[in-house]
Amino acid sequence: MKKFVLGAGLALAAGAAQAADDVTLQLKWVTQAQFAGYYVAQEKGFYEEEDLNVTIKPGGPDIAPEQVIAGGGADVIVTWMAAGLAARERGVPLVNIAQPFKSGGLQLTCLKETGISSPEDFAGKTLGVWFFGNEYPFYAWMAKLGLPTEGGEDGVEVLKQAFNVDPLLQKQADCISVMTYNEYGQVLDAGISEDELVTFNYLEQGVGMMEDGLYVMEENLSDDAFKEKMVRFVRASMKGWKYAEENPDEAAEIVVDNDETGAQTLDHQKYMMSEVAKLTAGSNGALAPADYEQTVATLLSAVSEDNPAITKEPEGMAYTLEITDEALQ
Image (cartoon, rainbow, N blue to C red; front, side, top):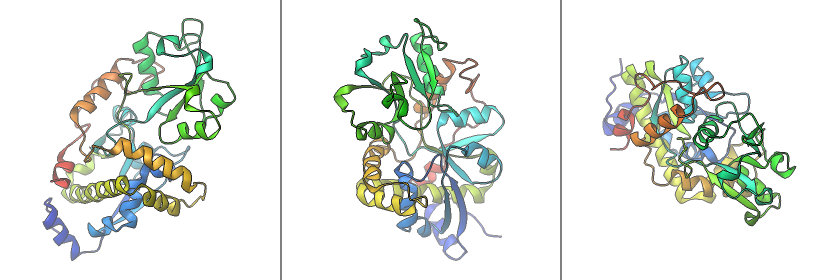
């Protein structure tokens, strides 16, 4: 039986004499620069250097990474911490093993012509919200503001927003959900200038939650061979992320080359990569426990039927620093 050792040099030496280890990564969304670090690691041979054969599975509107990994369809997934913790409380024991995104890109963008200049102006307005686990930060924010979400003059009307910016362009909503690296650019591309918009970043509003971390099933972490494989995977992935930060145009080209749908354009992926680099900057891949605690506290501040992400402090090992401690030494 192959003997696995967590040390980087020994791991490489052991792996070199063996067939490459397979790793399947399930992304949270479609192929785009949001996941550039993984595609760059693949294309630049960083996974191969770690003796890994990595399969990257794009996501989509009908794909829930938490369900995929629970069903055995992936070894590791990219998801938001709120969704990961929610899945954990519901019996899918996910563990955060790395956090490439240090900052969050989720924002609420409003047309200035609606009269909104601060969150105090939200009452009586219609706000576009993404669901499928993306709604948790919104409900936490409304709870913090003391705004009911059932509509009316004293509350806000929630519009279940598709993953596009049409509700703002068609003025069905006063504000919509956007990511800094994607939909915000689409609004600008539609001809609306930044001067016509007012934007609120969730992190700056004190209700930010960690986005795009790497999660595995807890039971797998009792397997030393799996842990050693994840050490190599995280190390190569972070190498890919740092390369992408330093070479955004090349990273964008790599993403487009890997988009089997042909839907992505190079110009938009360059924009996306330039914005994503702001979110991964300053992260070496290790989760800051304080960021985890902030996410948990924010979720617990607004537990309701509309916001059932978690109802109590996560039990057991919701995250571990063991993988990044080994990968990044």
